[in-house]
Length: 118
Image (cartoon, rainbow, N blue to C red):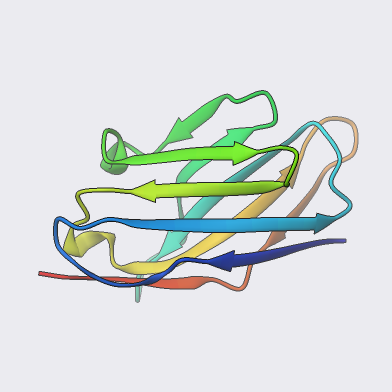
């Protein structure tokens, strides 16, 4: 089992910044990837950004240059720094933990709302 606790969502004006955090606990084994997905009303849940234990990152095209993902492996915590926010970034953001390799499992956080007012 992996528990994910998210924080940092909220309401911000367009052009502003927010920082999301997600702390993982439980069966944290490597190799793994932690990341953020988002889901707007009536839309599917899509990847925003992810980062592996080795530091490899992956970003959605829509956030490249504006969002930065990072992680502290000692704290099992992943961060998402979101700058130059746009109204279309409004969504529920979900933290994800994914173990890969010979043993695979996948866990989700409860989600945190990010609302960008235009």
